Image (cartoon, rainbow, N blue to C red; front, side, top):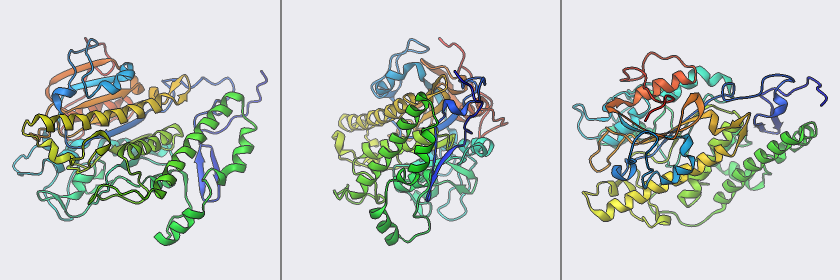
Length: 451
């Protein structure tokens, strides 16, 4: 082997007119004779996936603890990634409770989920919450990537008005908060999320002009074709394959967005949805998951949140035989038919999440995969949707970043603050934080043997 000493910078972009496509980690980005990228040297990504309205808890919680647990019905789709999955039981967000403020559990659930702070009850502009764990992480490690963080969602949202018993819509529709008064609303339009990450030609244009340009536009990859061909010709066989697989994923995402924009089928009546969103939820959620996966692979960001739905979501799921709105079904009053429908929705959500995990697992990076270098928290700010409880929350921890060890069901003491988990995860990615919301200290058993 001839060593020239030449290598690509990690922050290499394929640039063209109005576009800048980042590249995944390549062998050519490692200087000759340098140490290879390993779990200890690769960047660790931190992701939070939020599902609304709670779960059917007795169909979520596994039987058994430690390494001998059995996956429950709702968690069964995650079983192929058992060695990278921890189920955490006993965690709570006590500040999601009323504490004298009366109704509004859905707003409080979303608002305190990543902050651990009891939000001020107001439907006006004087909102008050806390800083969320993702934004604490972004403030420390966000300067190392093109975007400090990305916030995505699968329900059209707004930040003004009254969305839950006197609580501002800002609480219901956002889990990410940059400051106590500044929510980070999720981007729910796949096209806008895609163009934010890779650059677009439409910034600042009026909707009519933007629509006309989209009809005429070439693929964003066509805009960087010359640079791509020039670069690929200098790479080794392994890197050429990596670039080809990565750019194929980017083009596939773009193609699916274009198909969604052309889809004229009717969607559920009275359900707000931005233009260009796939009609079926499976297509929509998978597209948003894939956008996040590619952003991690290209190291465009290392911090992300994804709201599968806003709290109190009225989404229907006819593709799985549940045409009823989600939120009302959770108030089942022990009706077995309604419980079965909610359980189907919960399981559908974990099926889609499992696809996302599989996507990260398929992305090679250094001596492992992007999943090996990620920490992903999946869960809800409500445990039992029928009772609006905020104790014993449904929580998954997936990935191998930060020394996290999977294949375990860890049962913590009842009412352990969820924020203790966040404090520990921040420490695992090198962010030193004294406290978050109502945290009382770090949490145990994320990497230690627990049986």
